[in-house]
Amino acid sequence: MTNERGISRRSVAAGLAAGLAMPFLRRPAFAQANDADVVVVGAGAAGLAAARTLREAGLSVIVIEARGRIGGRVFTDASLGPAFDAGAQFIHWSETNPWIGIARDLGLTLTDDGGWTGPPDSFVDGARLTPEERAQRGSGFSALSAYTRIKAGAPDISFADAVREAPTQVARAARNLTRFNLGEEPERCSLADWDSLWAGENMMVREGYGTLVARYGAGIPVSLDSPARVVRWAGERVEVETDKGTIRAGRAIVTVPLGVLAAEGVRFEPALPAATRDAIGGLTMGALTKIALAFEPEAVRGLNPGGYFDVWGEERSLSLEPAHKGQPGLVLGMLGGAYARALCEAGEREAVAHVLDRLVAMAGSDIRKGFVGGRLTPWWTDPFARGSYSLALPGRLATRDALREPIGERVYLAGEASAGGGAMTVGGALLDGQRAARAVAGLKRG
Ligand SMILES: Cc1cc2nc3c(=O)[nH]c(=O)nc-3n(C[C@H](O)[C@H](O)[C@H](O)COP(=O)(O)OP(=O)(O)OC[C@H]3O[C@@H](n4cnc5c(N)ncnc54)[C@H](O)[C@@H]3O)c2cc1C
Image (cartoon, rainbow, N blue to C red; front, side, top):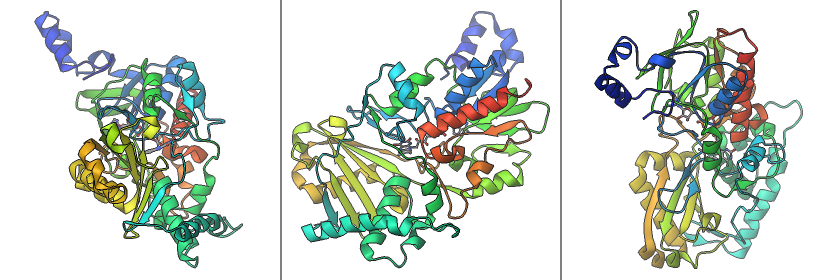
């Protein structure tokens, strides 16, 4: 399937039938568009923003996207009926986040109502916490910041090291913080990375963050279902090899996720410079995962609107939000770290059945009768994501900046991983895509 610019097999067949075959027969599938000033690889927030900026600067651009849709890790999924954001949901640091203005311009509805009304029901190993245990858990969170405060001049350490001598409830709070906010276990999360993130209030788009990004990108010609296989960057022009042909351009902006770069989901010829490979190695991907459960609204009307938290075998933290975004039958589960990786690898059927079992254990078996279906969005095993978002390993924060170094003045990496204080976010991805495009537009045309 293609979107405006790409030429699909069907259009070639139609050309043959109309006697217009000759030009297509001698040329690759990107026949009329295989050459441009810039090729942008990936049509998530960074790639779409880069493409818009380049086009505004008067450059010709080809955008290729591996999936059959744009938006990347921002996707509003309505396949169960009620819609939920399977990837990004919150517009973080909303005071300065450019998506706020874009949402307003597009006439979408902004809200600061994050659901979760009232205190959640919290469980450990299926046993409801007593009021004393709840208070203890609260005190763990209150005390956590004293342990995770960065000490001037001290080397960066992981969250796990920061709470090594702390009381159990503080260590537990650290685990829940990193699993739910970073999608990762505290051993692999850097205090400096967390501390470097821009702070601010969260907002949401009622129609979905994925809807917002999709509408923002709607006017940009994108060749869908066109994964880049090889990027050759040593010659006069960059060549990007896809299953539909080879694109040649003066410059390439590559916005595939850090996880895809690390897994060599796109091959570079020659290999990326040692400094870039080192920068990629300084980052890792978390595995924040959402599992949505849909019910007949009546069956789950009695669920606690404050939600459910389950810490299970201490190894697993799961949150469940009933009536997500006010939608009566929808319960949205969220989890991260090793637990999320295991469920992504187990697949949708097993993951959904497991989360339904956990909810039944907390809320009672009556709800099972009203269960309609579930959806796992397995970012961790998704070949075009390879995780939820990037994390700097302890001591490796500087590698985010190193990723911004142009490669042979031909290839520019961009996306959330190189977005500085906007790392991990859709807002950061947009700003970093614009940054790379401006750098390219400031150069002579290739
Ligand atoms: C579960 C979850 C929750 C999140 N919550 C939030 C949140 O609340 N707020 C927030 O701001 N952020 C959140 N994020 C992070 C946010 O989604 C990302 O930081 C942001 O979307 C990254 O944008 P990007 O353009 O850098 O990358 P992507 O959106 O991943 O775009 C890269 C594009 O490249 C494509 N691609 C991959 N390989 C190839 C290839 N070989 N050839 C061509 N194209 C390719 C991909 O399909 C994708 O479309 C969340 C992420 C997840 C997974």
